[in-house]
Image 1 (cartoon, rainbow, N blue to C red):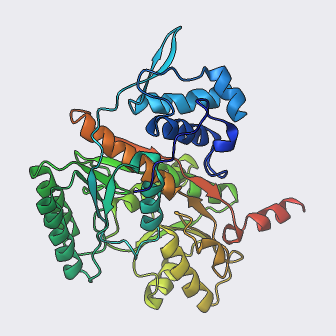
Image 2 (cartoon, rainbow, N blue to C red):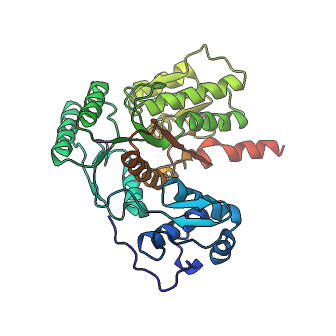
Image 3 (cartoon, helix red, strand yellow):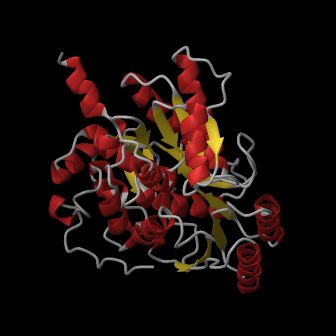
Length: 389
């Protein structure tokens, strides 16, 4: 998916060879060492520099270096021998795999394109290829197109498929199960992206890479509670992915921990562009704040609130989850939870290679942490100003 870097003349990586500066330090070290191994700077059986030497070369702490080397060890790239050092291992995984991307919502849901780019940027993907595929139809057509793409990948005998299950279609659960079962029957490993094929909190037998959605729902709701909101609604579209149910579970857990009643139904499902739904939300819930299932729901609901004369955040505080690229450019910049889609893609590649190399591994949920991004919509500045008086 990208060219392997040419071998360096020096056998010791230097700080000037670090990858993109905006990556975490341990990822910079990891990427540089991995590239050095893949390009032959360090060959099978070679001993890597000590952690102290690497720390000087990368201007990094021993903890940071250890984290990078531990990741290489987890991927089976190196072996750490007590008292002897770290040595490069033979790579068992055959090069030149072809993987299929089965992402029906690619082009519709903002998170999937950066996830795919994260896959392509991963050093682990250098020797492999990705086949892009998505369904452009609506509802039933989308379901049929996704299934056709599944059988196309089977006929092409791809090495594995990255599958982001359908949502918002009437028969999504049936088609998601049918697609995953067909791939499994063909002996093709499946790594799920972002969401499971089963309703939350059930789990399928396929590896999944995404964020910890329950924790994200908990943390974004707790943020509103800390700002003083007590009557907090949750808004979502019907037929959403299981990730939304996990976020609702976290939302309810935050309310419970704050000692608030869960008896009244403040979780509402509807079309955020439907004026009737918006009015129902305002009249029946009378919320002080709204947690939205994702940023797209928040964006559409925000426009509806503003058209109805509701001020944000003065009348209603709003938050989302995902931190898509337009979240900061909404009429009222959106407070949200940021998920690093590039990292999800990179980890997904690693997970697929692990699954191919070790088919007997137990099923894994690899859930990355999301981080709070505070903007105007939550009213944090309002709360701070009130605290001054």
